[in-house]
Image (cartoon, rainbow, N blue to C red; front, side):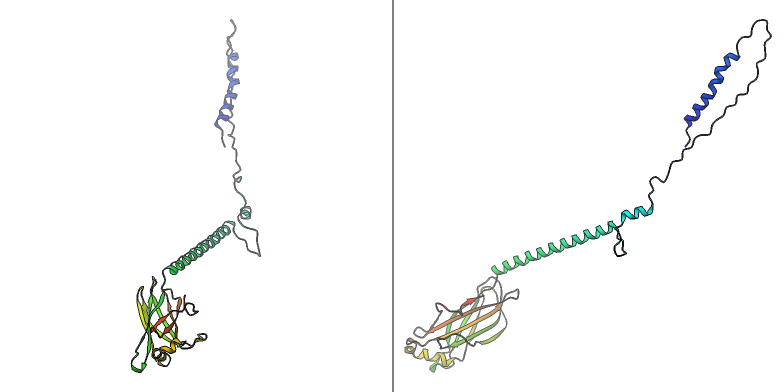
Length: 262
């Protein structure tokens, strides 16, 4: 790199002696002496070449191998992974795990809220209003009818009704006469009617002979109503009624394992 200030200073230093010696040479000659002719001088001014400083341009340049050594992980099984790429992949994996955990917790919270909602807003089937029908002369074709009512807050799909009519006091191990119900949906407050038929042999005797009923003879109607809610869960209501011949009515026993609601 050239420095103009240095070149100018050198010129001034070379010209300064010549200017200082000029007065001595130009002194006044003595009187009477012939003027002497001043010798001629040739002044040569040498201008030095400007200094050029070459800076090292490779100071900020690192070798390619050194940069590669800092950007890559050590080789594992012959594979070298870039540090930035591997960290980005790790961050993406952690983000995916966090999103999956958030989705799982949200789904579980939704299931809990849905189950609580269904537990409150669900169908309830209640069996009521038992009565004997068809008791003509000789009690031919006597049958029992009852109503099943949806007292819940959601629709109920009735799928099956099973009944067993017996005069035995031992109600364990009963065999139910099951009947499939097709396309019967009860909204809240709606009811359906079901009739148990062709049990004249069991129920005619208490109806005609009240004395026999007073002596301990009784007829029991045991059964169940199976239904499902809007979520598809199967539910069941069981019932048990005992016929009193003296008043011709059906009553609920004080304790019975057949009385339940799911």
